[in-house]
Image (cartoon, rainbow, N blue to C red; front, side, top):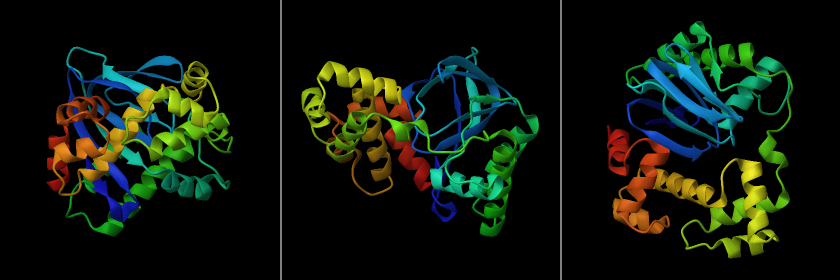
Length: 267
């Protein structure tokens, strides 16, 4: 994983997986990539879809999905992780409206867009590429993607209309992720019974409260891995039982161990 703070927090990932299976999760921003080899299967928007070599795969903010190899050799891909504000700014220029653009499919068969994703990704991951060229290339990629495939309908994402109890539960989880938070305490804060909260939470977000808590913990650990703290200390601070617990769940979320993730950041 490569972070590009000079480009508004855009992140790059280039990876190959054979046996990796991603647990059901979602992203705060957009994920946009191209398959370079093999094929990846994932459940998205209520459907089982497959992205094969030469195709584009994407997910929108807050939409739960998983991931696994769809062929025996797994898959290789290049991914962009795009902050919502970066995409919203580009959409505002291109579509002459406010709000985040929507995309109603997880796989796009557009060879020209896939080629542009691959080329732009390659240029952005090279340290010697001038900053202005990186900015220009990224803007061109966003323009092609949004201009061809964004839904005309604007407005906020579905997650902005979620049940108030779910919004409160998400808020509590984000505040208390490092503690041994119980479902009973979470339900009390949300004003629902535990059974009812689990049902409406999963219906609104696509994941259970426990899965959401795990993802928040993994995300906080990911942020801290950029610093000097020991991985064992990060695991404890983020609410994991120990370093092994963090390693197991972090790999299910990101496809990498915390140690490999830190090494990639340092490189």
